[in-house]
Amino acid sequence: MTAATAARTLFTALTGREPEGIWSAPGRVNLIGEHTDYNEGFVLPFAIPHRTYAAVAFNGTDAIRVASTFAEEPVEVELSALNTLFPAKAQGSDGQEPAEGPAVPEWSAYVLGVAWALRALQPGDANPGPSAGSGTQVSSGTQSRGVDIAIASDVPVGAGLSSSAAIEGATATALNELWGLGLDAVTLARAGRRAENEAVGAPTGIMDQMASMLGRADAATFLDCRTLETRSIPTGFTAAGLEVLVIDTQVKHAHSTGGYRERRDACERGAALLGIRSLRDAGVADLPRAAELMDEVTLRRVRHVITENQRVLDTVAVLGEQGPRAIGDLLVASHASMRDDFEISVPELDAAVDAALAHGAIGARMTGGGFGGAAIALVEHDAVGWVSDAVRAAFADAGFGAPHIFTVAPSEGPRRDA
Ligand code: ADP
Ligand code: MG
Image (cartoon, rainbow, N blue to C red; front, top):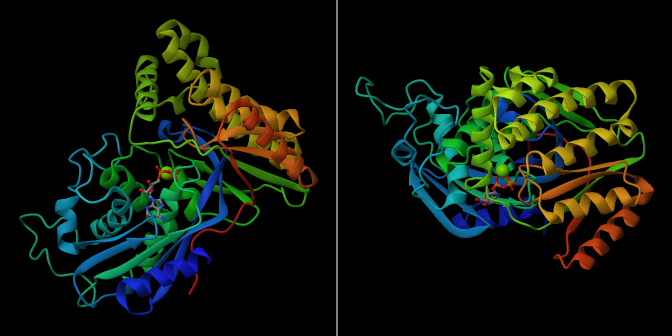
C-alpha cells in the first residue's frame, strides 16, 4: 500500500468518512552544509521522492484530531486549547530555548504545533491577550475550523531525512488550503520550524522546512539561513548519469537531547569569543585569530562551521561551472570535517562513506544532524549495485546491523495529491 493510500485508509478508519483532500510534502537530504543553518550560514539540501501524506477534512467541531500510522491512538485537542498547550515564548520565536516536553504525545506535537503556529499568524485569531475582544471567534467565515488529520509517510523516521519537516509541511500545506490562509511556502516553512522549536522542543534550524517546501525536480535549494534568500541550483545529476545513494545506517538519533544542543552552545560560545553575532560573520581568514581566542574543542567546532560555509559556496560554484562530477572532493572534505572537527559522525556513517569511496563513489558524506542517520554517496548510475553491495559487506564485516540503501533524485515540494 502506498503512503497516500495508507493516509486515506487511516482517515476512513478514524472518521468513517472520506477525506476532503490529501496533501503531501517531501523529506530531504542535505547535499552539503551541515550545522551551518543555526549559525546563519549556507546550506544546499534537496527534496527527495519520499513523502509524508496528510488526509484531512473538516470535522464540524472546534477540535483538531490527529492520527498517524506511526502511533494509531488518535490525539484530540480543542483549537482554543492550543495556546495553553504550547505557550508562546517570551523571548520570541527564534528557537534559542527548547520548550519543556509537550503535554501531548511527542509525534502529535509536530502536527498540532503547526496548527498552533498557523493560527498564531492570523490577526484576530492569535494569542488572545487581555485586550483582545474575543479569543474564541475565528477570523474567517468558516464557523468551525476543527479538522481530522490522518498521517502516513514513506520517509524513514529519525534517519536524518527529515520526516519531521515532511509531516510539518504536509500539515501546513493542508491547513493553508482548508483554512484559506493564502500563505506562501516560506511562511509555511517558518510555521513548521516554530512548531518544531517551540511545540516539540527540538532546537533545529530552518533548513529542513525550506528544503521540503521549496523542493524542485533536478535542483537543490541554496539557502542563506540569515536572509532566507533562496536560489534553485540545478544539480544536473540525471543528465550526467549520476545517482545519489542514501545509506540509512538505522542508527537512530535524537535532536531534542544531548550532542546537538552541545554543538549549538559551542558555536554560540565561539561567535561570542570572536565578537560576532554568529559564525556566519567569520571566514577562513579568521581561523588564526580564533585559535588565539578559544580552547581547542571550541576551535574545532568553529572551524567546521566556517569551512563548511565555504564548501557550500564552492559547491554551488562548481555545479554551475564544472558540473556534478566535480563536487566529489567537497563532499569528502565535508565528511572529514564533521568526523574530526565537529565530531558528530558515528562508526557506521564513517564505514558507509569509506566503503562507498573505496568502491568508486565520486563523493560521499554523512547527511543530517549526525549521531546516526544516513550518509549519501554520489555514484555513477551503473555503479549503484556494486557500491551498495560493498557498503553492505563492510557493515557485515564490522558487525553492524544491515543498512537500508536506496537512491533519491531531487524532487518537487509540497502538493495536493487528491
Ligand atoms: P528526522 O526528521 O530526521 O526523521 P526527527 O527526530 O527530526 O528525525 O523527527 C522524527 C520525529 O517526527 C518522530 O520521532 C515523530 O515524533 C515525528 N514524525 C515523523 N514522521 C511521522 C509520522 N509519519 N507520524 C507521526 N510522527 C512522525
Ligand atoms: Mg527532523
